[in-house]
Length: 288
Image 1 (tube, rainbow, N blue to C red):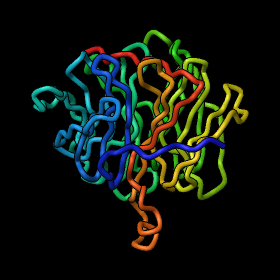
Image 2 (image 1 turned 180 degrees about the vertical axis):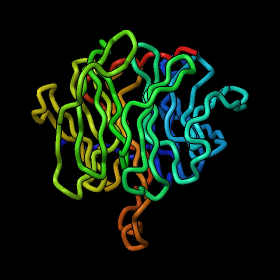
Image 3 (image 1 turned 120 degrees about the horizontal axis):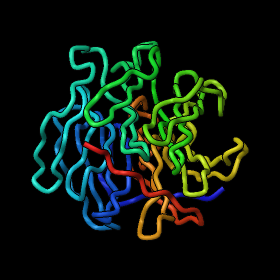
Image 4 (image 1 turned 60 degrees about the vertical axis):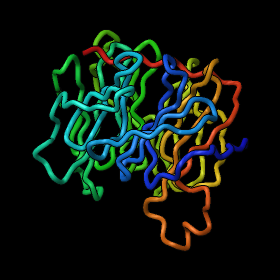
C-alpha cells in the first residue's frame, strides 16, 4: 500500500468536492461546514473564497466561472471577483436538506446530490441538470456519493454511503441520462462508507473510504487494483490532476470525530497528495 502526504493547506471540518481546474492549473475543494472554497496552484499559498451556504461540489463553466452545488441549489461563482449569483433552485424550500456529492457528465450536464443535514434516512435525491433544466433521477437516498463517469459518458456510478453500496448504470453519452436499471458494482462491510469517487483515463474507479484511512482503486470489473493510505480516517473525495494528470489528491474531514480522536489525528481535515503511475481524465465543462 502506498502512502499519501499532507499538503500545506487549511484544516477543513468537512473537506469535500476536490477537483482539478486545468485552465487555472489549480486544485479546488470545499469545506462544506466551513462554507469555504479553497484553490491551490501546486504548493503555493491557498486562495480562499467565502461561499453563500454549504457548498459541496462544482463544475467549470470557463476559466473563471464555476457552477457550484450549494444547499439551496446551483449558483454561479466568478472565481476572479469572488462574486456569486443564483442559477437554479433545488430543494430550496426544504430546510432539512443540503447539497452533497455532485459531478459534471462528459455531455456537459450535471448530476446534483442532496442529503439531510443530519443524514436523515432516505431524505436525499440525485438530480440531472442540463442547461438549467432539472430532472429527478433517484430519490430515497440517505447519503448520495461517488458520483462519477467514464470518459466516454456511457457509464455512471453513484453510492449511498449509508448502505455501503456503489451502483453502476448505463447512460446515454449524449445526455448523461440513465438507460436501464442500476446494478450493484461494489459493496463494503457495515461501517465502511464509500464517499467521493472518480474514474481515471483507463476506466479504473477510485473511491475515498470514510472511516478507514484509504483511497482505493478498482478495475472496471470491480477487482481491487491498489490502495493509498492516509493519516486521517475520514477520507471524503479523491481526484487526479496536475500537469500530466498523475497527481492524486484527496480531501478529509474532522466531522464526527470526538476530541480524543481529533487529538490522535493531527492531519485530520487536511488535503493529501501522492505521485502515481495513473492518469486522470479531464472533466467536461458544464453547458449553460
